[in-house]
Amino acid sequence: QAIQHYTDVLGQVGPNSTDPTARETRLTALCERGRLLGLVGEQEAALLAMEQYLREAYSDEMKIDALVNVGGRSRGIGRYPQALTAYRQALKLAEVVQDENGGAR
Image 1: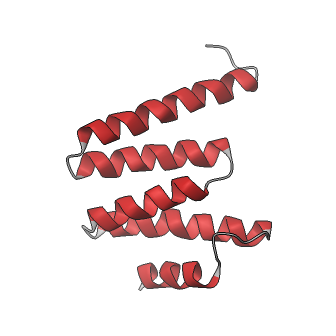
Image 2 (image 1 turned 180 degrees about the horizontal axis):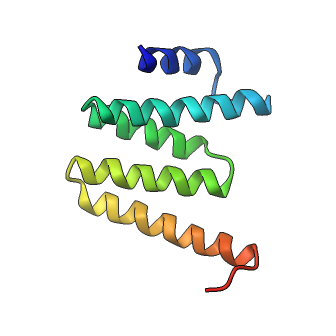
């Protein structure tokens, strides 16, 4: 039922929306739908949802979250090279964000 709710939200809010609240709602729906699909054993569908979340993410923090989720879903279905690539990209982006925000290494 929750998966269908998020699917309905995605059908109502397109990826090209210019309304910030609608974009945020869509990205939340993509992420949560992917997580729920993973919990019910639909790993391929969960990975596709997370990859879509990554494509639509507009902030570095969202991209990091999406990459970590892509890595986790890829690992869960045995796609270890893809998982490692996603995790490395997330780490690299997190280091850039930390540097830009004045964080120490």
